[in-house]
Length: 349
Image (cartoon, rainbow, N blue to C red; front, side, top):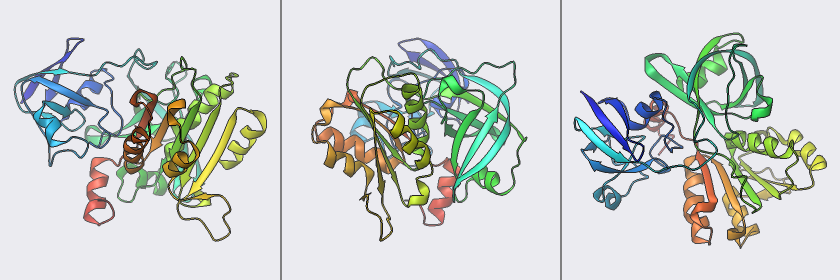
């Protein structure tokens, strides 16, 4: 069955098959709806069902409460159509990414460079005839057989886009990442789709910014920082980067160099599994931010990393007084098939 879905207030009409999510169908149609993790955790894609019905492939997504479902809300990254016609009221975005055009483009793996034991820098070269326009903080999807896709944030800023830079973490059981680390070679051809996502720096704000990264969540923050610093933005910026070990802080030499060049930048690394001789901060990165900044309302917060970190920030930062409209985040989740394998192995909840 293919359903006709009308998206309000723009009145776009998309065709959605019963086996795909409404968000995936919208992205396929070039409509960049608000979303982040695509795993049902972050609730960025929450929308109200005005008519018709939806279903979920398994249990109610963790980012949606039973009361919200009773009030007519759904998470479009997980919701499938359960009626021939639906009308959905989606959240409008007034961000720099609203007008970026989603495109499908071939590319070539130009370079692959290990950054950490389980992190690979991948540089993609686009055809010379292609002009790829994006906003720092956005991501691309790498297209796989069977209409599957894997999402990766762009680590380079738009003004340095001769090659697209990705920081890819190896995921046990991950179809793409296992191949990348074990068998893929430079010069291999891929197809990407993008730019995608709503994660972008609000440059019209006058507040200083705290940028909080977990693991490879550093990648989109790097794009934002380079974009701001390299064109002379002087607002106060404080990067917090959480990782398990020192080896996972794979970009520290670059960050330390920035600190000598840009007096408006501060940097705090936080290790969750520090060695005995570690003299820096330890524990959870979001807890370090809360300890350092009791008046969060004075800042804009940009956070990118695993769902557990984003979930803690969404709840604890707001409880500590951060207005919700000053929090911007990108939640990194496992692909559905990789997550299923990790759950079966007892590695993921």
